[in-house]
Length: 485
Figure (cartoon, rainbow, N blue to C red):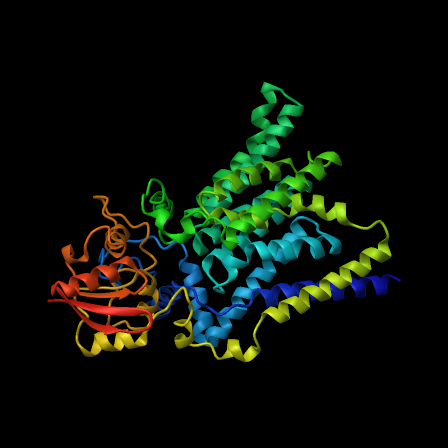
């Protein structure tokens, strides 16, 4: 009987995690992929961490604290040895590993996984859709963080493991700051509840002394990186930056968009689960998660980037609905679990292309992605006609150009959305003002402009061409080139 049960558990787990892997296998189409590869390549060629900006013409030599330098080294190594398919496998693998660690952190049963995992995977699908990026490492470390906290519940000394965790996290992605907030929020809420139940002024300090020491230790650990406290200063650039609202990751979901509806779906699932937990008397145990998610839910309606971490840590709350739906009969449970697991895999396979589709990925196919729409024809035209100096290029093409056309420096790229110098100058703000035609490109310093045809600046340049101030010299399906007369 035990052998049959173990076999059943093994088969279901294989089905569930296989479905997650298949669902999370995407073509690498991140617009920033090129400059991430270039940073990794620089490390392997020189043995040093790149600190200055010499890839783009705006804000030359700007000293930037690259918070994802270790991720760049990793992705370059994978790409250099295994190509695009390696990045696809890396991205799908880290998402699958994140779900595996979450199951351990929240002690999810097969039933819980069969119900909750497809929901969470649907909610986070948009952030996975460009394959591996450094944010995925942050979500994996978030899962590890809550696994450590699950160990801490039984043995407080296990909290020491967060120190090496944050040492690694601070080198792989700047999301470690959000991790610190999650950790302090969770521990803070737990301690407030603990102290409230046994209130005594004399016991307050002793109740939190160990956790405070651990917090100091992990903060020191985060400073062990090539940029020291510079990674915190770089994060401070986000606060009060008026241009962030024009960068998709930092903007709210567009009303009635697919991602907006997912947030609404989650809100309803969350409220329903909290109600079930309250009625069944289990709300007290999950109260720290409820409070954290309420905060993150409010923030998610203003900035989408808070949604992904919230979705991943929602499993303890979604247990409310999962347990409510669970049949009382064990045999019926197993039948439903097996059916859902097979359906999960079948749907995953149905929604994905054949392996050849992923194996044939190249930079030309990369340019066909709607979020990139880059053009080799435009770059060849610029190169052949020696129009590389004093040129304005699209923000979304910067990474692609840095990797594929190092001889043609883009004016701006995806690293630069929060860059501000000591005088408050923003390269992104300068670029965005012209590309949105809030100010005429004719007043700029540029003599050549490579512009995406869907941007307002294209219409302005067409008008300036009729006024004989600029010449329209190149056009393709996505872009156009204009030169000043």
